[in-house]
Amino acid sequence: MRKNIVAGNWKMNKTLQEGLALATELNAALEGATLKCDVVIGTPFIHLAAVAAAVNTKVVGVAAQNCADKASGAYTGEVSAAMLKSTGAEYVILGHSERREYYGETSAILNSKVELALANGLTPIYCCGEALDVRNANEQNAYVQKQLEETVFNLSADDFAKIVIAYEPIWAIGTGVTASTEQAQEMLAFIRTLIAEKFGKDMAENTSILYGGSCNAKNAPELFAQPDIDGGLIGGASLKVEDFKAIIDAF
Ligand code: 13P
Image (cartoon, rainbow, N blue to C red; front, side):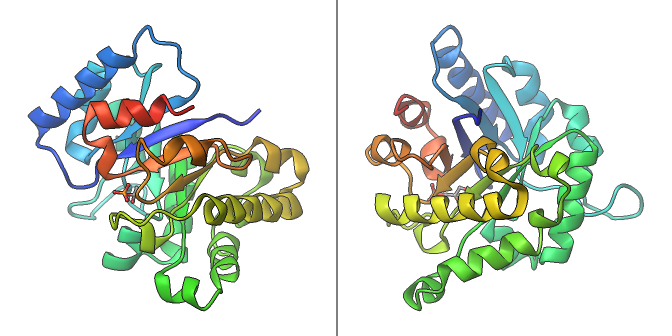
């Protein structure tokens, strides 16, 4: 059975002290509560160890937002998947459009990152999604299909079973423009069909697929009620406990 997941992506926000305070407050708000979804927070690298130690990771899972495409060695400034795992993090967000767009992450680079994450026992939250010009040309399905075919569809079935997919249309990220419920459901259903064709129906039914892009407390209930939307990847609204908790409670 696939899981419902609400994952926060803090991006490059919060000092260590602010991040620790946010994580601790979130943990206190969730511990003991009956939750209908798994909760994950994606923090900057430097927060990971402290945050993982401060929360009950059975209640609040911890994610990195990136990892190196190399295992170890002379790669100044990089952080390996093994290092991430050693902090207590269990997830890593990979292929975010901001990484693809601003840091030149190609499918080849992402294949290495996904492989290393899996080899080190991390769960990749693998992002895909099209830009506005692609959507306006109504080519979003082919675009997302290509992103998946060039990367995670090359995994073995055993490995694919360990990943989470997040569809984040670039035009909806940080813009306040959410994909309509119909647009989000349609794309996630399409992705599930692709998974079924590639790995079989059981795999499709068991893969968690999230929507991301201006998801908030207001639109989350309708989005999460859709049959193929298993949760959200949340940027701005994950930076305040009140906002993030309201999204978690939308299930
Ligand atoms: P926003 O929720 O701020 O639009 O960001 C979405 C996102 O990019 C999460 O990874």
